[in-house]
Image: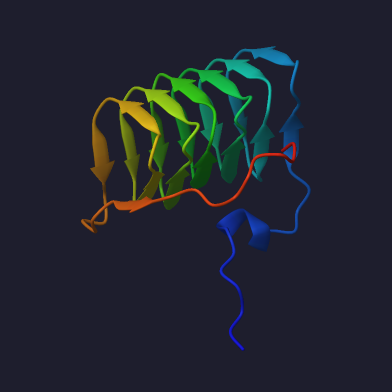
Length: 134
Protein backbone atom coordinates (compact mmCIF):
# COMPACT_ATOMS: atom_id res chain seq x y z
CA UNK A 1 0.00 0.00 0.00
CA UNK A 2 1.45 3.39 -0.94
CA UNK A 3 1.92 6.29 1.48
CA UNK A 4 -0.78 8.98 1.05
CA UNK A 5 0.31 12.23 -0.59
CA UNK A 6 0.97 14.91 2.00
CA UNK A 7 1.28 18.65 1.77
CA UNK A 8 4.84 19.81 2.26
CA UNK A 9 3.97 21.54 5.58
CA UNK A 10 2.74 18.21 6.97
CA UNK A 11 6.33 16.96 6.80
CA UNK A 12 7.81 19.60 9.14
CA UNK A 13 7.85 18.96 12.88
CA UNK A 14 9.08 22.30 14.27
CA UNK A 15 6.59 24.51 16.10
CA UNK A 16 5.51 27.33 13.74
CA UNK A 17 5.18 31.03 14.47
CA UNK A 18 1.43 31.71 14.58
CA UNK A 19 -0.36 34.99 13.92
CA UNK A 20 -3.88 34.12 14.98
CA UNK A 21 -7.19 35.35 13.60
CA UNK A 22 -8.02 38.76 15.06
CA UNK A 23 -4.33 39.71 15.41
CA UNK A 24 -2.88 42.60 13.39
CA UNK A 25 0.89 42.95 12.92
CA UNK A 26 2.23 46.25 11.53
CA UNK A 27 5.85 46.11 10.37
CA UNK A 28 8.18 43.87 8.43
CA UNK A 29 8.65 40.24 9.50
CA UNK A 30 11.96 38.40 9.14
CA UNK A 31 12.80 34.97 10.48
CA UNK A 32 13.41 31.28 9.96
CA UNK A 33 10.96 28.46 10.46
CA UNK A 34 7.35 28.03 9.46
CA UNK A 35 4.74 30.79 9.72
CA UNK A 36 0.99 30.24 10.02
CA UNK A 37 -0.99 33.44 9.47
CA UNK A 38 -4.73 33.58 10.17
CA UNK A 39 -4.73 37.30 11.08
CA UNK A 40 -3.42 40.41 9.30
CA UNK A 41 0.11 41.53 8.44
CA UNK A 42 0.90 45.01 7.12
CA UNK A 43 4.54 44.92 6.03
CA UNK A 44 7.01 42.87 4.00
CA UNK A 45 8.00 39.33 4.90
CA UNK A 46 11.42 37.71 4.54
CA UNK A 47 10.71 34.16 5.70
CA UNK A 48 13.52 31.62 5.87
CA UNK A 49 10.94 28.83 6.02
CA UNK A 50 7.40 28.22 4.82
CA UNK A 51 4.23 30.29 4.94
CA UNK A 52 0.72 28.98 5.46
CA UNK A 53 -1.68 31.89 4.88
CA UNK A 54 -5.07 30.66 6.06
CA UNK A 55 -8.35 31.63 4.37
CA UNK A 56 -8.85 34.27 7.10
CA UNK A 57 -5.31 35.62 6.62
CA UNK A 58 -4.52 38.95 4.97
CA UNK A 59 -1.01 40.11 4.06
CA UNK A 60 -0.38 43.61 2.69
CA UNK A 61 3.23 43.71 1.51
CA UNK A 62 5.73 41.71 -0.48
CA UNK A 63 6.54 38.21 0.81
CA UNK A 64 9.61 36.04 0.21
CA UNK A 65 9.46 32.44 1.51
CA UNK A 66 11.01 29.03 0.92
CA UNK A 67 7.61 27.41 0.28
CA UNK A 68 4.00 28.49 0.72
CA UNK A 69 0.38 27.46 0.90
CA UNK A 70 -1.92 30.41 0.26
CA UNK A 71 -5.65 30.38 1.01
CA UNK A 72 -6.02 34.02 2.10
CA UNK A 73 -5.47 37.45 0.55
CA UNK A 74 -2.17 39.03 -0.49
CA UNK A 75 -1.72 42.55 -1.82
CA UNK A 76 1.85 43.18 -2.86
CA UNK A 77 3.35 40.05 -4.36
CA UNK A 78 4.90 36.71 -3.47
CA UNK A 79 8.29 35.15 -4.32
CA UNK A 80 8.76 31.51 -3.30
CA UNK A 81 12.02 29.60 -3.79
CA UNK A 82 10.37 26.16 -3.80
CA UNK A 83 6.79 24.92 -3.98
CA UNK A 84 3.75 27.20 -3.99
CA UNK A 85 0.18 25.98 -3.58
CA UNK A 86 -2.60 28.53 -4.16
CA UNK A 87 -5.96 27.41 -2.74
CA UNK A 88 -9.37 28.18 -4.22
CA UNK A 89 -10.11 30.87 -1.59
CA UNK A 90 -6.90 32.80 -2.37
CA UNK A 91 -6.86 36.31 -3.81
CA UNK A 92 -3.42 37.61 -4.79
CA UNK A 93 -2.97 41.12 -6.15
CA UNK A 94 0.61 41.35 -7.32
CA UNK A 95 3.24 39.26 -9.05
CA UNK A 96 3.82 35.63 -8.07
CA UNK A 97 6.93 33.54 -8.68
CA UNK A 98 7.95 30.08 -7.48
CA UNK A 99 9.95 27.05 -8.60
CA UNK A 100 6.70 25.06 -8.91
CA UNK A 101 3.13 26.34 -8.71
CA UNK A 102 -0.14 24.50 -8.17
CA UNK A 103 -3.25 26.66 -8.35
CA UNK A 104 -6.79 25.61 -7.46
CA UNK A 105 -9.74 26.38 -9.68
CA UNK A 106 -11.42 29.47 -8.25
CA UNK A 107 -8.23 31.16 -7.00
CA UNK A 108 -7.71 34.76 -8.15
CA UNK A 109 -4.28 36.07 -9.14
CA UNK A 110 -4.18 39.63 -10.50
CA UNK A 111 -0.59 39.95 -11.67
CA UNK A 112 2.19 38.11 -13.45
CA UNK A 113 2.83 34.44 -12.62
CA UNK A 114 6.32 33.02 -13.16
CA UNK A 115 7.31 29.37 -12.71
CA UNK A 116 11.09 29.60 -12.29
CA UNK A 117 11.76 25.90 -12.98
CA UNK A 118 10.20 26.15 -16.43
CA UNK A 119 7.71 23.39 -15.53
CA UNK A 120 4.07 23.98 -16.42
CA UNK A 121 1.81 25.43 -13.73
CA UNK A 122 -0.47 22.73 -12.29
CA UNK A 123 -4.20 23.34 -11.91
CA UNK A 124 -6.21 21.32 -9.40
CA UNK A 125 -9.63 21.15 -7.81
CA UNK A 126 -9.53 21.68 -4.03
CA UNK A 127 -10.77 18.60 -2.23
CA UNK A 128 -9.87 19.54 1.34
CA UNK A 129 -12.31 21.55 3.40
CA UNK A 130 -11.26 24.56 5.44
CA UNK A 131 -13.31 23.70 8.53
CA UNK A 132 -10.19 23.51 10.70
CA UNK A 133 -8.46 26.67 11.84
CA UNK A 134 -4.81 27.11 10.89
